[in-house]
Length: 361
Picture (cartoon, rainbow, N blue to C red):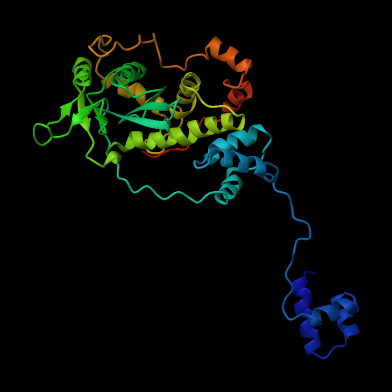
């Protein structure tokens, strides 16, 4: 009989005038048990004497350390789930998410309304700045408006010749050129807005020549409204949370710093295996699948740019699949020095999600 039921029956029999021995015989318990229940002022609550260990408990310290290493950024639950699953975690995602909520506040909902574009119409471009100083690290990000297929290239500067070279390789990766490309007010694209009248901007001469050569129209966001290019902005956050923060924090735990070469080797695999392979939260299909349809509506690739700025680096024969990790990089990883990356860092990357976060954009 449960403690609550014993308490209620003891109290009831006492009101009927039964003695302690009579109550004990009726209930089937000791006299001291009857005496203890009569002394209680309320129904006794059941308390587990020994706290049951959860499947996640042995990984909680690891999760705290991972999030601490990533601070002020956070690592998504899907990435951490892959990592602890590889270490033996057999529990579910809901248990993990509940624990992660104790480590960080829930992000606010994104109220931005996004507009859809037809196939081959628009590509959105943005720079993401990850690190300043003597060893800067930036990422060129390009996202197609229809398929949400994305291209990322890490660089150490944001000069116009670098921007043009990144465009060359992005178009090659997508298999063609969109009719319009949307930017914010980066100085390597536009020098002065409305210089010749409303909507008539003074563009960077070298980049304008490249746009004409490639066959796309330059479009600008409204001032102070970078969210106008919400698809690439949303992808930028996804890139930071699901690729950069997990990788950079792993390196930081080993006393290392992410460099341009390593970032490009790993992001190529991440794009092919995770970002463009996941089921997208808005389109409900993998960007790589949607790209197969959108590619048929893209303009043909132009001849390699040889303008007055600086010739872009030669295009690879194909950039659709992720390139193999260069032997030089693998050798450098296998024999780490204070400025090099240990091999276990790259093994840990293989634990990263393949389904992604279902990011809506």
